[in-house]
Length: 114
Ligand code: AMP
Image (cartoon, rainbow, N blue to C red):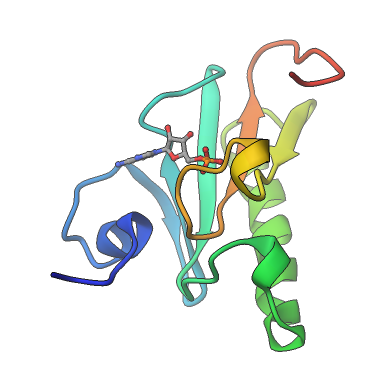
C-alpha cells in the first residue's frame, strides 16, 4: 500500500483533479466539494502534514502558498474579496493530512466563520 497522501496522488496524476495552476513548489486544484462559487486548494508538493508541523526550512514554501493564492484569486476574478483558510487539526475540521490552503470567493462570506 502506498503511503502517499491523497494530494500527493493528485500531484502525481494518479488521481484526477481539475488543476488550475502548477509550478515547482505547489499545485492549485478546484475543490471537489466547493463551498463557494470559487473554491480552490493551494497544495505544496512537499507533503507537509499541517501548518502546525511545518519546519523553519519550510518558510519559503509557506510564503509561496500565500503568494500563489493571491495570484490565483486574481486569475479567477475574485481579487476584490476572497478568503484564505487553513484547517489545522481535527477540531478545525482538517480531513486531509497534507497541508492545503483553501481560497474561497465569488459570494459574500460571513464572519465569524462556523
Ligand atoms: P480540509 O477539510 O481542510 O482538510 O480540506 C480538505 C478538502 O479537500 C475538502 O474541502 C474536500 O472537499 C477536498 N477534497 C477531498 N478530496 C478531494 C479530491 N479528490 N479532489 C479535490 N478536492 C478534494
